[in-house]
Amino acid sequence: MKRKQGNAPCVSCGKANLSKDEIGINLKLLGENVRHYYCLDCLADYLEVSPRDILDKIAEFKAEGCKLFE
Image 1 (cartoon, rainbow, N blue to C red):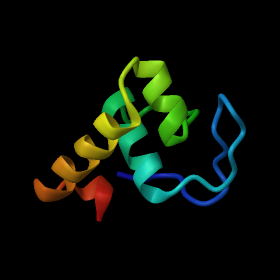
Image 2: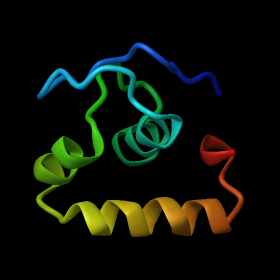
Image 3: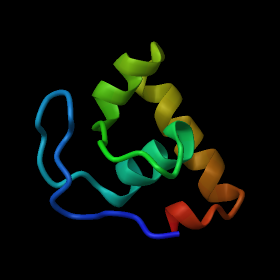
Image 4: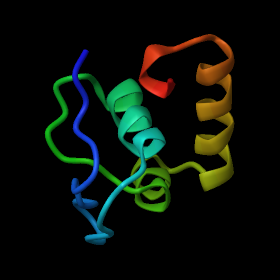
């Protein structure tokens, strides 16, 4: 599965250079066909959860060996 890295800005706030974890969690939670990415804080707002909830899910997916978070 390909993932866009580096210069993908947040579609909501415009934050530049999203991390690979931010790109990965967008793909994992919003679907692999997503074309626009959210930074951690904007994704949390969009999903109506806390940023801590998103970070916890990233840690969980990493522990499961999800390839999006290698």
